[in-house]
Image 1 (cartoon, rainbow, N blue to C red):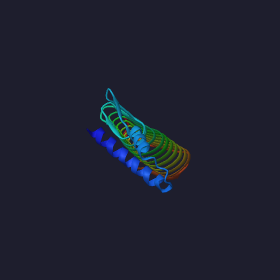
Image 2 (cartoon, rainbow, N blue to C red; image 1 turned 60 degrees about the horizontal axis):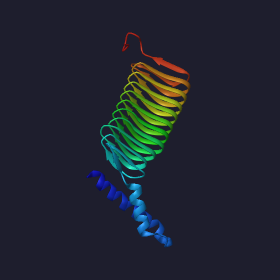
Image 3 (cartoon, one colour; image 1 turned 60 degrees about the vertical axis):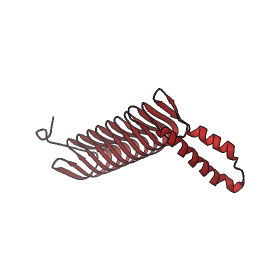
Image 4 (cartoon, rainbow, N blue to C red; image 1 turned 90 degrees about the horizontal axis):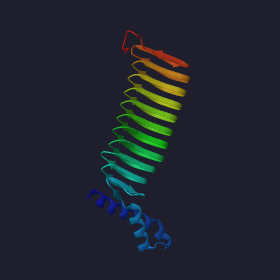
Length: 223
């Protein structure tokens, strides 16, 4: 029933949007446009896996699309190749190339190339190339190349190349190459090549740190 409602609403919204854009030029083929919008928004359920081109859907085992504003899979993955507005997944929430506004996953939440607004993951929150505004993960929060606004990780918070505004991790925060605003970790805060304005590990603080590794005392907090 939910997918039926989503299909109807999505089709109407796409049709009205197309009419608004193309009716100004008197070029809108109404019947063909309605059929095309319905085809693009159609969710096809194959044994709990839902496939759609640019539709919005819920799936028991997974939801897969080229672009979606809404995807929810309680037991499986959500995957959008180009754009995802909202993704909630029982396993992995992934966007290939483009924009993700909100991702929540029991395992991994990832963007290969693009912009991530909010990521919350039970395992890893990852952005390959691009911008991440907020990442929260029970294990690792990682930016390979780009800008990270806020990272909070149960294990490691890592930025490969780029800028990190705020990092907080129970084990290690690390910036390989670039600029880091604030790093806070229970064990180690590392800036391999670049500058960190403030590093804090337990009761130790280091400011304007370059090529710096600040570690906790072995007797305090070590496992």
